[in-house]
Each structure stands twice: as C-alpha cells, then as structure tokens.
Length: 243
Image (cartoon, rainbow, N blue to C red; front, side, top):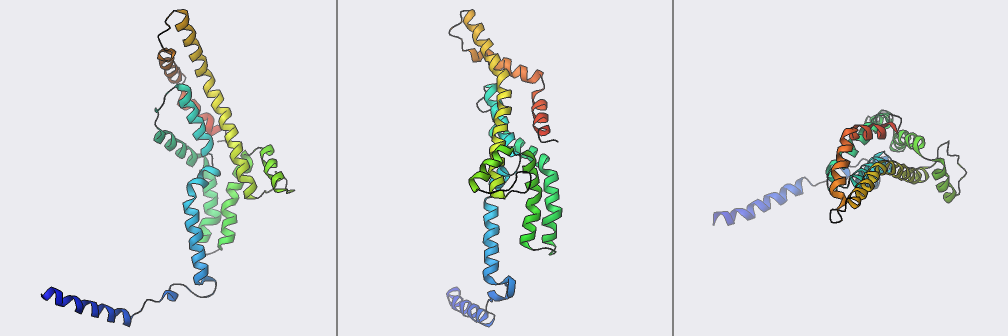
C-alpha cells in the first residue's frame, strides 16, 4: 500500500521539477548563422553523408579495381567459396587504405583539421577535402571516359583541368571497371590454359567419366603457389596506381 501511495507523490514532485526548469531547445542552438533550421540542415547532411559512406568508398577510391581482380582470381582458380568473401573484401579494403593513405592525409591536413579547429567553414572545407581525391581520380581516369560524361553535360571543360565531381566520379568508376576487367582477363588466361590441357589429357586417355576439374584444380592451385601468386598480384595492383 505504501508503494502505491508513493507513486502520486513522485509524479507530483517530477512535474514540479520539470515546471521549475523547463527544457529550452533554443539554448542549444545559437542565433544567427547557427540557427535551428541551419543546424538541422547540417545534421541532415551529415547523416546523409554517413549513410552513403560505403558507396563513396567504392566510387572515389581504388577499391573497385581490387575487388574485381580478386573476384576474377577466385573464378579462374575454380574455387566457389575459397577465399571467402569476407577475406577478399577485407584484403581489398586494407589495400585501398594503403593506396589512398597519401590522399587521405592531404585531405585531413588541408580540410578536416582546419574545419575541426574552426579556422575554415564547411563550404571551404568541402573543397579542400575533395581536392586530393579529385587529383587522384584525374590521375587514373581515362580521357575518353571523362569526355563521354562531359558531352552528356554539354560542358566545355577540358579533362586536364578541373571537371565537376558529377562528371569526374562516374568517369572514374567506368575507367576502374575497365581496368579491373583487363587485369581479370590476364589473371584468367593462364588458368584457362591449364583447364584446356586437363580436358585434352582426360579425353586422350579415355577417361570420359573423370571431370577435368579434378585434375585442373590441384594443378592451378600448385601453379599459383609456385609463382608466388599473391605477392605478384597484390604488387601489380598497387603498382598500377604508381605506388
């Protein structure tokens, strides 16, 4: 009974406390440039950027080329789930961090740190943060792909200057896709030759019931080990960006 009698007392005390010290949202949002609407728009923009961060990682970095090359490697070896997707994606991510480290450091020093210290505004910080990534994409995009999207936009900007991001990013992505498939073709060709040799051997020996993959799979894995394939492939991918 005492418990039930204490509940109204607690509720009354809480209501009095809230009435005495009401919560003022305006106190958290300064007037002027930091008005409530401005801060809410900034918060919405920050949440939007965070939600598309994985897509941005794929669009403006070297991740696409690495992921495609490793996918072709697994297909060429004839392995369905080895290495696992988690391993290949993790390796692609860490290789991306390695290749993009100089670009990220320049973006941090030029844009992020001054913004956090309050020395520059958001608009200027955006330009300084994106400029290193713009230079990276310009160094690796094909002029033909860049001109394609510039023609769609009907702009007269030269590819050697500073194209808009909505032109540069898709051009860079299709350039990375093309180079990824080129590297994948070079990866698959030796394994295809081993598959053909294994098929010819099984047919010439009259072993029609023996799947050629039974012989080809160990041969391809052994071949990849003997040439130190991981070192060769990863080194070639990193050097393809001038690293």
